[in-house]
Amino acid sequence: MAKPQRLWQRVFDYIRKDLPEIIVPSCLPDHPTSEKCRRLSWREIGQVSRTALKAYADSWSSSPSRMEELHREPEFRNSSLLAEIRDEFAQVAKGGAKGLAPYLHRLAHLRAAVVKDSINAFTEGYKDGLSGRTGPGSEGFGRAAERNDG
Image (cartoon, rainbow, N blue to C red; front, side, top):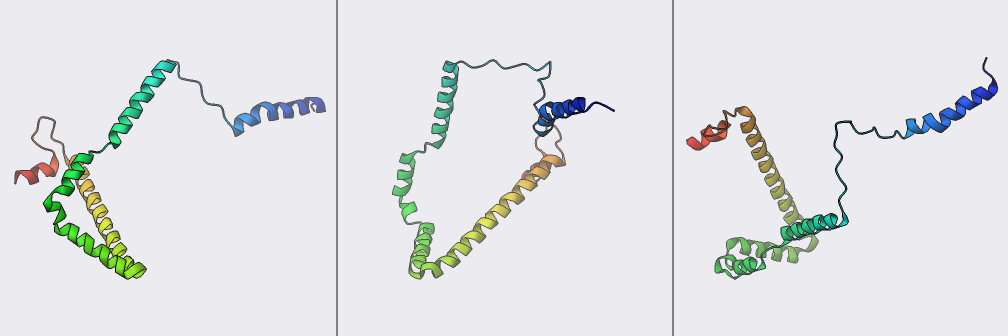
């Protein structure tokens, strides 16, 4: 039988070395064929950040002049859609919380119908893509091309 001192040494080695590796394993080393990317300098980090922020800001910018033109057009002011929206808001304002419930119910049904239609359109397009691509030189893909031809 092993000496008690040697037994305790093995237990302590296990607790000190093996147990932490089991609980929190260290990551594997990189594969020998993988290439490491070089570190960017502070100047390059600044350039990348400026470019990314500029692209992000440009994506949020809208054309206020176009919106002003749209609101000035007489068709927009007198459109039946705008009149409907005004009437609905007037009814909601008169009814209070009880008047708001049917409006929100109708809005939820409308949004659900839009989501359902978009999912159906997506799945149909996906099936068309899977159903048979005849090749890059052909005129169309799948059933969508057959429907467009007549």
